[in-house]
Image: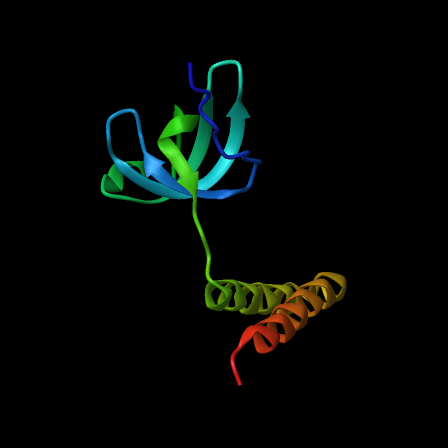
Length: 113
């Protein structure tokens, strides 16, 4: 008997996969139901436009973590900075700025000379 190792997911994790109806989805985890082996996902993209923006439930084994490149993370943080500025949330702005600065420093360290 082989044991199937599934990734550990948390609320808010970005994932991609398929619904129980084999529709391609991408979104973030809204809630996890380990007893059922399912997750509820807020769909941001799908080949079924009707489910975009809705919460759907699918089996955990049908989803995978959505990997983000460093460039994707940088753009995401820059967008969050814009939101923090619009909401005039100085504390949140500083938190995001520190994360962006750390990401950029790590990116420079890993780049070949």
